[in-house]
Structure formats: C-alpha cells, structure tokens
Figure 1 (tube, rainbow, N blue to C red):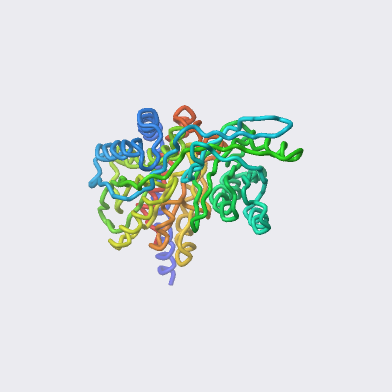
Figure 2: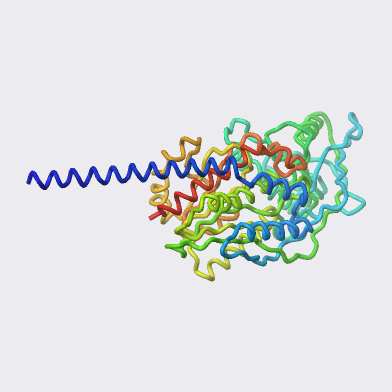
Length: 462
C-alpha cells in the first residue's frame, strides 16, 4: 500500500511539473510573438498603403476592386499554401453630389447643417425636398405619431443620443443605432418625405457620420445624418418654433456588381479539417479611408500570418485569413463565405474578427451556439494567466457581423476588443484616416490576436 501511494504521488508530481513546464513554454512563445510584432510587424505599413494609396473602398467602387487585388498580392507574398478570390454580388450605391441640409426658421433664418447621406439611401433628386420637422427619440414614438397621421409630408428628425454613462461605447452605439438603420423606412411607411438622424457618436462636434440604412417592404425616403452640434442646434430651435428643413441629395443605387472575398490559408499539419479563421472586412465607406473601420482589422489578420511565419511556427490546424467584402452595406461577402463553407461541410473550430478599430488591445469577447458555448469557453478561460500580463481579458459577448454567420458550425466565435473610447470619434466619417491610427497600438493588436491563435491551435477546444 505504501508503494502504491508513493506511485500516485510521483505520478501527480510529474503531471504538475509537465503542466508547469508547458505553461512556461507558452509564456515564452507568446513573449516572442509580442517581440516579433513590435519589431517586425507589417500591419502599419500595409495599412498606410491601403488607406493612402487606395483610400475609400465602398463595395462596387474602383477602390474596393483595387483593395481586392492588393490584399490578394499581399497574401500571396506571405507564402500561404493557397490564396483565392471568392465571388460575391455586392450592392453598388453612390453618394453623388455633396449633400445639402438647411434648417429654416423665422427667428434664425437659414442655417446650413453638416450632413452625410446614409448608405443605401435614395436621393431627393436635383430639386430636393422641403418639409416641416418632427422630432422623435425612438422608433416607437415615430410609429405612434405615424399612426396618428402626423408624419405625412414631414421630415422626421431622429434625435436619440448615445448613453454617456455606458463605459463601453460599443454598448452606447448598440443602444442608439436602430434609429439610423430602421428609422427612415419607419418614417416612409407613414408618409414622411425625408429623414434626418443624429450622428452615431458620443462626441460633440461638427462632423457627420454616415452608415447604413435598410428599407423594408418598399418604404423609402431620403435620409441623412447630421453632426451632433447640428442636432443640438435643431433640437433647440424646435423648442422655440416650427422649423423646416430643405434637403437635397443625389445618391442612388446602381446595378449590383461582382466583387470578391480575399482568402488565404496555411494547411494544418495534424488536424487540417479544424479551421482557425482570422478576419476583417475589406470594404469601407466612401468618406475617409476606413483606417480604423476596417483597414486595421484586415492588416491585423494579415500580420497574424506574417508573425507566425517569422517565428517559423508550423500550425497543427488550418489557419485561414479572410478579407470580407461588403460588411458595411449588405453583408454579401459574409453570406457567400458561409454558404460556400457549409456546402463543403467545413468546420471552423474558431473564428476571430477584428472590426472595432486599431486602438490599444483590451481582450476578446466570445460567442457561440448555445449547445457548445459553455464547455468550449471554459477551455479558453484556462488561458487567462498567459494573456493577462498583456492587459487582455476574455469575456462573453458579441463576435462580429461577418463571423457570426458561422455560429451554426458550432465552433467558438471571437471579437477582438480594443479600447473603445475614441472609436466613435472617427467611425464612418472623413476623419477615419491613416493619421489617427497609432502604430504601436495597431501592432499590439496583431500580437494579441496571434497569441490567441497560437493557443487555439496548440490546445484546441475539446
């Protein structure tokens, strides 16, 4: 009996020693990842070319086509096993002439309001439209007024601001963005001739933010976003008197066009049928150059492959890099990717999306099918001691608009989560340019994602 307990003690000690030794190896390798990213990372140089030389990349535009070719060449130069283009049909919306939005009242006369047409919006035509303004703070309020006949012939002003008490500004965005996405079609349903929306930002400035709107059941009217300063001016004017707005936009939806997702992969040496995906979306809005949204996510994903190549790492599982097309105003790339993957009966063990900017990394949010999430996330939480020294957390939350389409494959989905405080200063504006991205913050994001990919590849999720 004494020998039996001695045997158990020795076996336990060996097991603990092996685990500690393996943990040390992981810690040293993750440190090598960070060292390589900070000294040899290419994300910033790639981003400078994407934003300065190519610029805005709205689906269907020449910029989007140039970005497809550029990122294809970059993937090919990284020495992946396979690089290919995946076709998808994307909407082709064009902004047209500069928008005109004028507030007209007896007391203030005519005041120009800085504005941008919302993506997918129809235009007013060259003559424009003019109507009395009706202010609302929610879709429910708009519907109540519409049922009373009080929106017909009017211009509806959606004016619900961000909740400034939200520490995570992504949550504040989620609490306000429905009025931009669905507000115009709600107003049109009840006869409104136009819509003005407060820009989706927690900052008070004179910079308008565009973004997608979605029409339903044929209910359409022209829609623009105005800056938060303009929204505050309009709100104050409406407290004193009736106000009219003259609105002129020439945006239009043209015939859909053929575009592509850009995909590259390194085939796994032991479990090639288990895919670990890193991704961003290649398209951006036509204003600005999409440096944070989502040039940063694209170059993060490329840099993951570059860093592992520099470290001569041989993955057990297949590592796949995807640049999605058309996240901003349709999601055609994500649907095309999911449909193709499902037909081929692929399994994405893990899918990571970087689409929250290139700011200082804070960690990752994770999501997944209800059948598998708890057990798989427990495995991931075990790695926290290796990530916390770099200021990274792991928590339940959303993943991303593109990778979320893969949920039914029952792998784990991750959203890279950088600091969110400045993101909506630039989101969907002409200020989202290369000079607002900090090189060190950007490459730290590459390192964080690479570290997670390494752990996923080494240990899996079973």
